[in-house]
Image (cartoon, rainbow, N blue to C red; front, side):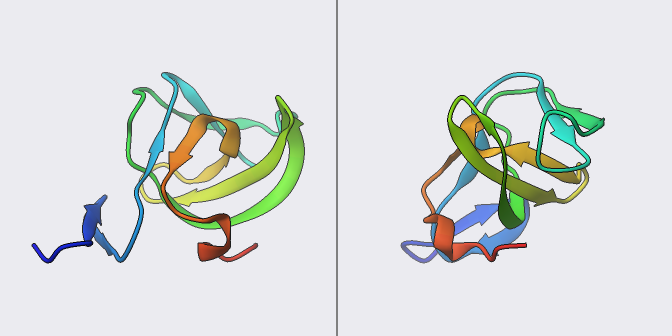
Length: 93
């Protein structure tokens, strides 16, 4: 594999890696804890694919929420996501 390229969730990503940082991360129908839970990502370290981001309800002071794509689709708070990518590298919703 060429240096600097990462394969994430079967998708070629030019830079960065995005993973969950908590077990049992709830995926919601919108950017806040008041939205319905539509799924759960069971394991910490699970790769996720970000479609876009927007500001929503603060979780421990962090107002950024990501719309994730793939088999588990919905919204997760940035507070429980670890990424090596800059926020600006993902489009806002």
